[in-house]
Image 1 (cartoon, one colour):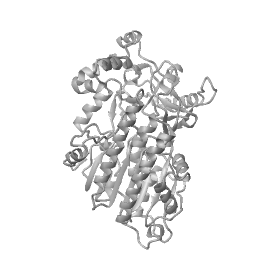
Image 2: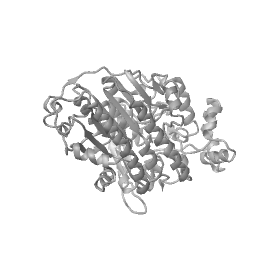
Image 3: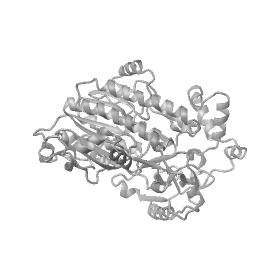
Image 4: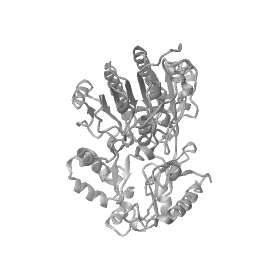
Length: 529
């Protein structure tokens, strides 16, 4: 592609949830993905390092804001509270402006963690973690009826964990998911007036957790490649730069490492005992057993969520044993616990209502637990299974960040989990999970053919997108402009990066009332950690 003396004033960000660089690179080299190959040949391509831990809830907000979680404020899908309950994170919890707050008009579609929809200049259709098709689903609100009328089988996501014993049905429903997301993209691409277009396919993440079969995955990636071809035509017509990014990578696993069970074994966590909950467990009445009995009667968990009063759901959940640390841990005798997808908290007296560790003892406790976790070995292989990071180093600017970040060595097949199981090590019920290395590809008038980003991270995406269209980069951004991907003759390569201070968003977490109710029901029987 020839260099241009001026930059376009439009940028299209195509998100691919969970696409790993090594898989994409192999299939490009084998000639299986012609449109991705075109991006590599005519643009810039390389790996993209994710957040710690590499999860959707952290990474998409980082991509959209250019800041790490200690600045944008989201460490997990749910935030643990001082009373050990969970509160769902929504778009209202993001403390930094997102790309669509800076570049307008904007078209935003299916981006995770955007519910409820912002009052953007343009249109927004929210993505993963949207509970229902209510007024928070779209902006403007009337767009929701339009979408459901034109795409009657539209699906926001797919709960892969419900299909463990029915792969055939899963793949059928997955086809519906992909088709509906493509239909939404096609509908949104009828909009002509935009400066930022930001759309995410979450389908790769959904299928890879359950089906790590390269023949099946290649079929899906070829469908993504076909969708990319449509996007390339659209972007070229609009004279825009295109950025293709994934929030994290993916790879196979076979073993769960239950960190709370390990903490219990080492004396740092105490499980509740002597309660009705414990008696029910001894009788075999567990969460899984309850779900099985309900299924036999033709009743789903979702039926209960919608038909029973919230107080009843919470009461039942507090008695039915399962794997939910919210109800199974005695915090009056617990030193530390893990939460979310790898956040470890010391149960200190300042942060938690039933804390037992004095603040000045936290550093020593952290160091002791870190040593213990890093020394944990698989009893069958003798292999060390955990990576542990100091929260003060990963999240430097937030005193309330997790104390440690715990992550199983996924490249060796280990994934950490919070379940209070009978054993520290169990077989995994998923076939693959997140890895840290995603993808970054850029293409357009400003991009140098055959270039590659250098040590790129998800925090670099927003600064690079802004700079590509001639906009200043927020002074608070943690990422950098990937200047090496720009054509030397393009303005984006020649001009200095300009910074400006932007007002932080309201971080008071003024949740939508309906969403709070749905969230409480989802966590009610332990189906949300």
